[in-house]
Length: 107
Length: 448
Image (cartoon, rainbow over all chains, first blue to last red; front, side, top):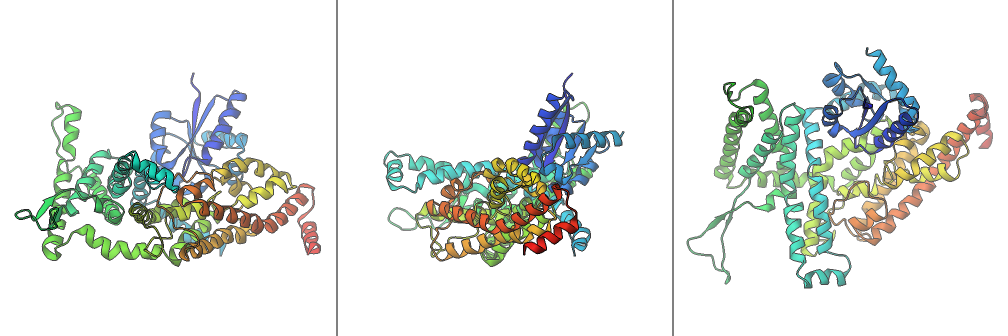
């Protein structure tokens, strides 16, 4: 089975790709079964269509986008916010844990 | 004060930023970027800063070919903008964007002038019988048409989406193939929008013997460009993004999105002057362009934080700051600094407000003065990716003098951030060693 996709959203798709790569690697080495991708807001809807993510996580600097994604996709896909310091420290385990919390809280 | 901003001011600003017009503007302008960047390469090639190479391109007849590419890209930037904005609006509203984008293009052409009058022959005499010729004129589809493109793009996107949402479209029976039916969807909105544009053209033509795009350029765009090119413009690009970032919000994208059209128009004016062979502030070149923001205000990341990164990398003793230093140094070379902003953190950290606000502001004011007085050359109007590393970026958008100036600003960044970073490092180190807040405060007081 293909890995379950987690989609991360930020403004330009730059810094988010750093975190996405770390989370992806972390998941691979620990066999968590996630694939993680980070994209810009402008590419978000298209990626959601193609990736069918199990969760969408919004970067702190664009937390104002949370409402938009929650309204558009919240019914089918859990949407969460990434906490500031774990984003800054590029703390992959913490963000994955937070993503899992968002998923289980929406169930 | 903090609470008031967080609860009253920010939510309203963000609501505004997240409205459909702002989204359409921000996302729509993005579509023109590849064209501007490729066009920039050809602009730089034809006007190569080193004469032997510049002459070589002229001698082997390559210069006119390079110019052709420039003319079809940078010189038509408003055309890309109008299509992009009308497209992005419809997409944001949840409808297929292409019909809307094409309608935007047609509308832009309707309100543009299309006649070159007073045709003269080689001897300079007006040609008898031919007083005008019909054409699509690039003049008004480039930087000078930018504000009109934004207005038309939003107008078309809005009206088109309204019609589709209300279901005022031609519906064909279900037996008709979907593709055929889809092509009829745009029919009624197109008829209404283009009639409206025709009426606008007619009113301007019959009423004032001019066109909408020329009037808007004269009455709105020129004053706005003028304002964006002075102290007010410097304040907006140097201070506002940082203020947003202090509260953890991506201010660069927000301010860049709002100011993008004007800064682009400023840069394109400069590009045209470079092409004409006379680029100087004396002859009217703009100082505050997109490059001013990207290459002098937010390079190495918002807040010009390279100085802080260097401190964390070489001098920090606390574990947290050391880690951030190692995380941040590579992204910093590409002007990305989220790890630093959130990890240090600078966001919501009053200790860093002074250098974070001060360094870009000092750079903005000094750069403005240096360009205005002719010590630094103005920007050549080339658009390069904002991730282009410092020094190289300065070289591309202006020349070696700008590259050296960027280096000087980076040194300034090291100096200004140093004392603040040092103090913060001591606080974190003490905390990591298990000291209580009171002990830390006592130590710091003795330190003074």
